Length: 153
Image 1 (spheres, rainbow, N blue to C red):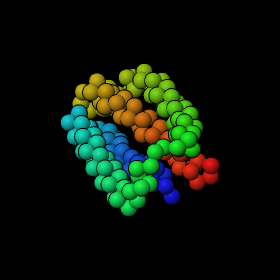
Image 2 (image 1 turned 60 degrees about the horizontal axis):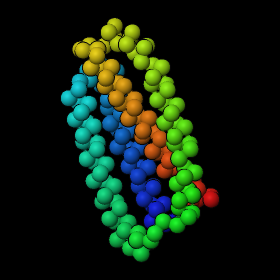
Image 3 (image 1 turned 90 degrees about the vertical axis):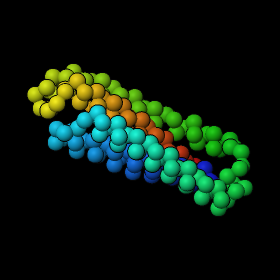
Image 4 (image 1 turned 30 degrees about the vertical axis):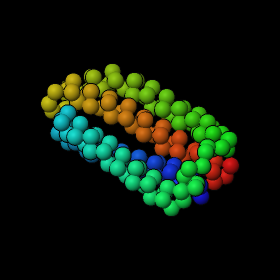
């Protein structure tokens, strides 16, 4: 397994686990009607910091284990795999954004009836996290598509 493939695995797993945990927590708070901007921003900030630390540490460990592989220039195969992985990732990103856009009017109608606190803030939190979910899905798809190509391409 090449350094790039190992890095993709780290990125995919770390992103799915860290952002999945954050989005699950926000979803749980929303379900209980107790979410606040401070909670969402705090969880988001912790997740960003944790993701950076995990990815940097993992990259250092992987580079230390195979320094020549880590310093190797990207070849045509790597570029082709990255380019081909962009299509499914972008497609999913587009679909999730469209679904979020279509859900906005429903959310605006429903939020005041079922949400305690400031409905505008809750709507903003939901929409922001829906966009984050779209990005996470796209990133995980991008990594998975490249890994698939490394394994079967």
